[in-house]
Length: 250
Image: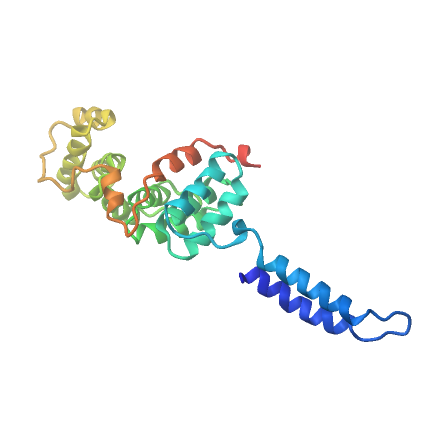
């Protein structure tokens, strides 16, 4: 019996004791209380599976993702929340996006950063990238260039080409002179993966020497394989959530 059933049974046991006692005006026959108890107990045991906690597997993640793609944002948030609290990095990152944009939940930058960091600490590269940008743009949390650079580097090392570009640009524009060569190296890695903005920025700073390669030229998908459980549906979910405005979710 699931938790909903147990709660119903507890309430019904108290209720059956109460209604079985005689009152001044009415007395419920004993068999009626037993029949009500038995019938509702069976109903509780047969509670729909949708109300149960989702499993952290492809089926559970796909179900939550499908809810979001069909604009059932509050239900999607609820299911992702259940899995996130069990430690699922994909669900934690999804909650970060939903809180950051106000999709299915109240827009809350601190909650977004909280869930992004939970996910990033488990090795989720997109969560690390999104958290880095929050630190660098002062979006509801205090701007912290060093924290932003730290998370950008983690994302870049896992293959997020946008993170390589952002880290290269940051090294060149806002960090110490010692970081200039490293910045150009990150930009060159991003350019080698076809990131046009990196090529354009390199052309603007041609005199900066090049440092040895700093990261792995991989794809985000390969970076995600390093997680304990690899879910191929994450990219589609992120694309869906990123395309939704906060207003559309109300």
